[in-house]
Structure formats: structure tokens, C-alpha cells
Image (cartoon, rainbow, N blue to C red; front, side):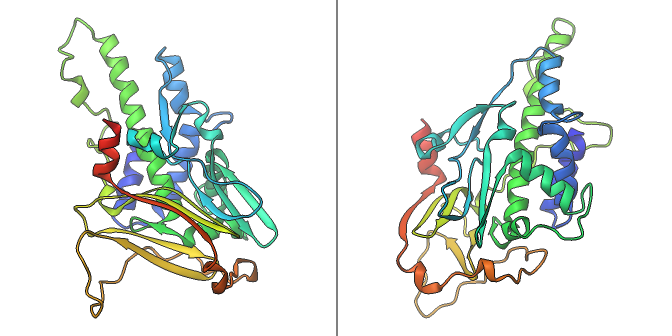
Length: 303
């Protein structure tokens, strides 16, 4: 299952958009609650290894005014604690909030458990509903790091699960073979099923790492980590029917020049629904609360 997870991450990175459907299915089994699921937690428990603590970014806003908010994204940047990130146990991770999506008068709140389960059950990974809920579709009007937001979130969770699985495999093998084989280089070992990919997923931090975003009727907030050495930091924010491509880079842009267009995956379905309409004039009066930090800043804060 972990090797299948790794395959799907690679396919997503190679541009196979529908690989996120397969990723949702295996992530649900490895991470979510329910009979036959929680496989990653069961590996830790059944092998007698202490559950790890996962660092999740600031939780999404959830008050009634919220129109869209995302957070609780797995991160290995300990400097994120200064921006609201907190540790949680592996068993509690699925219950942590991930998204708040408000369309019209209906606000849908997703935990990691419900996001993964709904995505697997609605989009075609395990089942395909006749009508995919609009709230679930609306998530993909946002994009980060070249991926639709749902793909970005699922990939971030999958990379964390992969790393946690490799950690427990190494601990089990270290105890099992202690004294019988050389184990000092075990930290460089990657355990895979026959034919599986024997490398860690590629690092995409050069495209920017979203930590938290919130758009409510009176405020707009953002925490975004960027790679100051890269020109690929970019994301797309969809405020109702008003879209913004956001880019960060170190160099200056002349007022007369046009930067290269930001490239993202297109939403899988175009949403035509009056409930997502936002008057552009209202965006001018929003209270702004945003932090854009370089990875160097975040890592300096960690030390």
C-alpha cells in the first residue's frame, strides 16, 4: 500500500491529473478512521512503536463568516510553529479540520477524514457520484504549486504518510536485525514492495508552500512560505468569481514588462453557480492579515 502511495505521488508529479483519485483511495485506507482503515496507525501499534507526532500548520478558520479557508497542512518546517502550527498524534490527525467551504447559505467543514473519504467516494477513485458536491468541486478553483488545491493537499498528506511509514519500517528492521546485520546506515534505506520506487518523493518547495488561507465576508488572511531562490512560487486564489494569480520572486519586474503566465491545472469541472458570486467591490474593504516568509526565514526561526 505504501508503494502504491508512492506510485501515485510520482504520477501526480508527472502530470497525471486523475492520479489524485487513486491517491485518495489509498490515503483513506492508510490514514482515515473506520473498519479496515488506519493502516499506518496499525503498523505503529502492532509493531510496538510509539506513535509519531505530526506537525500541522495553522487550522482553517471556521466561523460563520468564512467563505473559504484551508489549513492543518502537514509540514516538516518546525519554524511554522511561530505561525500557528501545532503537533498532533497520528491517531488524531484524521480528525483535525482541513477546509471550510461556504457557498451561499451552506457552509461545509471538512476534516482530513471527511476530505479523503468524500474525495475517494465522490470523484471516481472508489465510487463516482452522479453529481459531485459543489463544495468539493469548488476546492479545485484554488491552486498551489502548479496543482489544484485538492491535489496539493492530498500530495502533502501522502508525502507525510510515506515518510512516517519509512520511519516505522526502519525502526522495526533495526530491532529485528539488531546484532545480526550492519544497521548503522539504516537511515538511508528505503523499504518498498518488489518493483516499487525506491526514492523519496521530490521536493516541490521551490513552488511555494501554502500554510493557511482564509477568505471571509470581512477579512482575507494568508500564510505562505516561498523559496527565495526560485521564480516558480505561485498560487491561484479564487475569491468567489474573482480570480487572482499570485507570484513571488526576488527580482524586480519593470512596469512595462509582462511576466510569464502562471500555469496551473485547470479545475476538473467548471462551476456555474450563483452561490459562489462575490462582488469585486467588497474585496476592497477586506481587512488583510497576510504573511509571506522565505524558507530561509522560517528555518532561521526554527534554530
